[in-house]
Length: 415
Image (tube, rainbow, N blue to C red; front, top):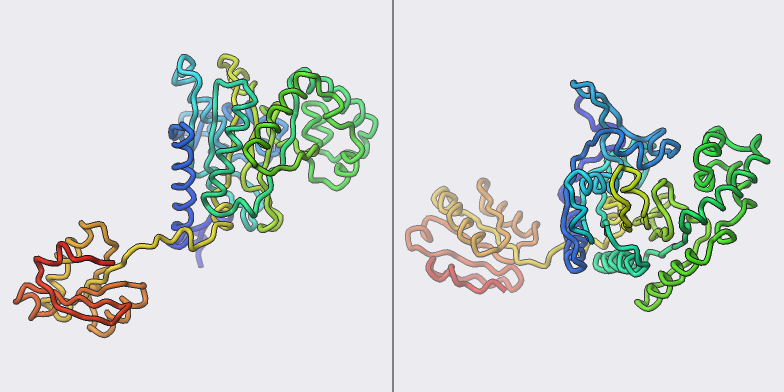
């Protein structure tokens, strides 16, 4: 088969069953976001490359190995968005929204990273996320985590997930910790991977995120961030944990959790699961008070998270996504009945019922199809019904079948 008619590696076709789960996850998240006062924002799927390269960090794996960068016909360097936060921050600056703080944004849509495809990880994947701008209070972190927890409960997977949380401290604490890491890793530089040697010069905290086995052994003995947290950072984190406890959200403090992007400070968190193999993170985020300033905007505190819809959908029980709705089949018994069935199906749909109209085939086959799709009722139309302005209603659950007038069909009680 020609490559031109196959899917590109790392992409997927969302067939109706997949789309049903995706839609349920997205709608559930959107409903919860509205309850928390978040408004929906939709940013372009590509931006000037600088939007992502500056914010995600030149030493990050995302920028070094995973972004889809291209030059357009005008010679501009553009990048397909690998995540949502940077685009929202860019919109905040370019749309001049500084006077409207605080602001809360919700988004969903496709993202793109050139990663090694595997279960739960695609090169075109889907995320939903939330960004809260303008609050420097730890209570904003608590509320942000609470919304994420409510969404996981809504889609029936909270019992499958564990909240891992940590603090990166403020800029003063991070500077002191950075100095300690540089000293430690410089003494072991010959044992570092090539990637981590580069990170040592630009951002040593990234070494702690390394997947290299040799780096992991060094990381186990590296200085711990909690040793360098100042009083302000400790107080902030205690407030976050107290708030989470007050809401009854279970959590584990994970001192190894650092998150992979440059713009985080203070709170970082992940909801993880053991149900998806290696791809255990389903939702992650944290505080990023320096992001917008890095992009040329005013100093603006922010906190947010993003979740992979692909992974959420894989965990979501299918029965939750299947609406318990009445399904009606319209069956034309002959040519005259088929012609009239289009009008009857249209009338039934206008009442808000899911309606399937079988437009060709023998009567027996149509009834078999109606039974296969789980129809609750069949509306049967033949020449006699059309002439007499009636319709035969069959209840599949009881087997009862009766003829009613077309006028009565408009108010018939489909239970």
